[in-house]
Length: 361
Image 1: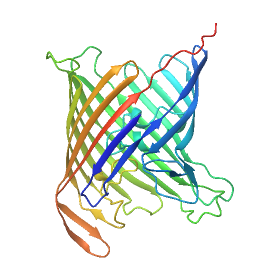
Image 2: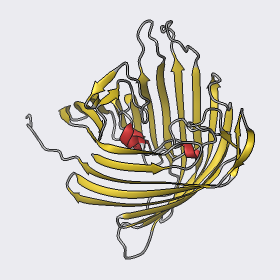
Image 3: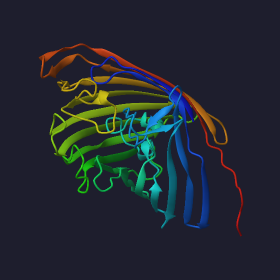
Image 4: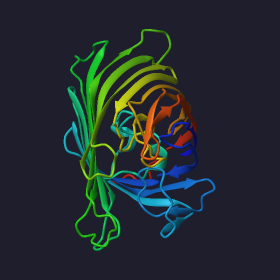
C-alpha cells in the first residue's frame, strides 16, 4: 500500500512530520481443515528517502538507533494460525487482526499506526454474536534474552461492543467498553540500564447509536458516540501523572463514498499510550511540559473508492483545534498556551488481490 501523510502540528504536545512510503504484506495461505487456516509471509515497510531502519519492534514512528539496522526495508515475518472453534468464536495465534481492526476510539489508538507500526503478534480471541462483539488480545512487542540490555514489553487489549437493540430496529444502540494495558519490565535482563517496572492503563466506556438515513444517496448513515476515558499509571513513575480522565464525543456522517465527522475532547491529566498525543495532556516533544485541562474540537473528511476486486484508494483531511489553556514546565512554571490549529492530510492506494494457486481434494 503506497501512502503519503503530512502532519502539520503547531501544538507543544507533538511536532509535525511527514510519512511518505509503502508497506507490503505478501502472504501465502493454506487451509488444511474446514475450520483451520494458516498464513505465512512478511511485512515490509519502506519510507521514501530512507536507506537504513532501526532494527526493533515499531509500535509507532520509530526512534533512530544506529547500532542495529536493516537496509532497504524494515521487515518482520507474518505467520497466522486462524482456528474457528464455533460460528461465533475465533482464536488467532501469531500475527493478529490488529491495529484499527480493534475498533478503539481515537484517544486510545491513533489510526496513523496503520502506516508506521508493525503487525501485532501473539494471541487473539474474537467472539461475535447478536448481543456482544468481543476482541481480546495480547501483543508481544519486545522479547528479551538472558542479560539483555533492554526491557520486555507487551500489551493487553480488550474491545467490546454490547448491542442491546433488537435486530431490525432503525436505531441501533450499543455500549462500547475498551481497555489497553502496556507492561515493561523483565526478570532476566540484569544488564539493562533501566529495570524499573512500568505498567500503564487506558480505558474507555460510553454509549453510541447508529441509524441508516432514508435518503436517495446510497450507503448513508449517521452515528453518534460519547465515551469517558481513563488513564492509570499502575507501576513506575516515568510519566508525570498517576491517573487522569477525560471525555470524547464524535458524530459521523456517511454519504456514499464520503465520510465526515465532528468531535469534541476534554481531559485532565490524561496520557494516551497508543493514541494521538494531541488528545492528551503530556508533551512527547518537550520533556516535562503538561497542559491544564486541554480541550479540542476535531473535524474529519474522507473519500474512499473501491476500484475493483482487491483494489481501492482514498484521501482524507483532519483538523484539530486545541483551545487556549495553561502549560507547565519545571523551568517556567505555569504560562499561557495559545489556541493552536493542527491538521493532517493523506492519500493512499490499497492493492490486496488474491488468487488460488492449487486446490487439494
